[in-house]
Length: 125
Image 1 (cartoon, rainbow, N blue to C red):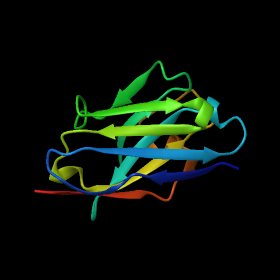
Image 2: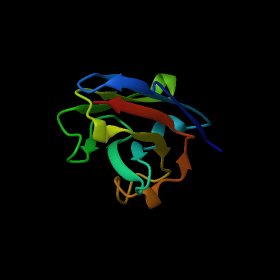
Image 3: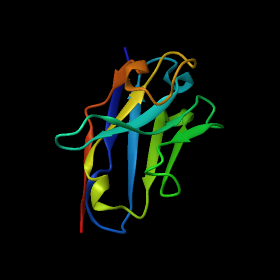
């Protein structure tokens, strides 16, 4: 079993930054691709960013490219999401996810096997 715990959310003004963290417990977790998704009130969960097991490859939703950066520290079993130039439309609950397989889509939520409880990000205008 893998447990994911997110932190770092909060209230920030538009243009501000937050660094989200996701720490995992479980064996061989560092080898699993990881991602961040988000869900705003009344909307479906959407892909934000993903990173492969080595950290060499990353993927981003168009809406966050050039503003968000995903990274990982396998020694700490952690993945991070640096969010810059935040906009009110970035307001959502942000979820960390991990998948067992390195194959398949990195942006489809159905591909992910483990999920955290989420951390709230609120951006005021």
